[in-house]
Length: 132
Picture 1 (cartoon, helix red, strand yellow):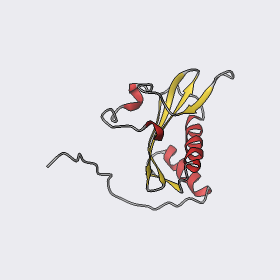
Picture 2 (cartoon, rainbow, N blue to C red):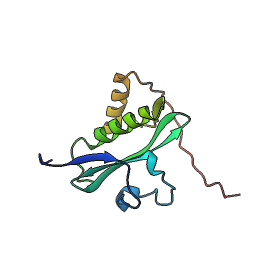
Picture 3 (cartoon, one colour):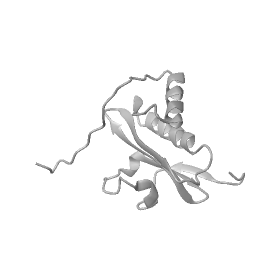
Picture 4 (cartoon, rainbow, N blue to C red):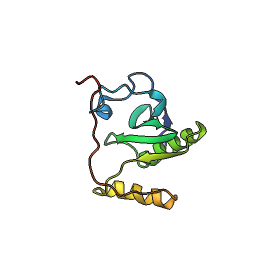
């Protein structure tokens, strides 16, 4: 990353997030109050999709473009946690797998900050409500 890069973490404007970061979520109704983006030199490079789940910040998806600057995930997560705390949320929930080094690293960070890890097996199941 060049030294004069300007980084900003904020909520996006309408249609500001690149399609590459929305793959698989195109049909979702995204509440921009619970979506954070990382902007580097005026270009959206990464995003964090979350929701308020009964007073907990549920982190659903963390994605970035390949050219995202070093430290992009940490910047997004720190800002989302600060904003969630200021909104009165009590904590956070995130589903992690132990199959990638990045997610193992996130597990260690959670533990270092007195978070709780509950080992589980199974699947995340989702369905449409209009199906009979």
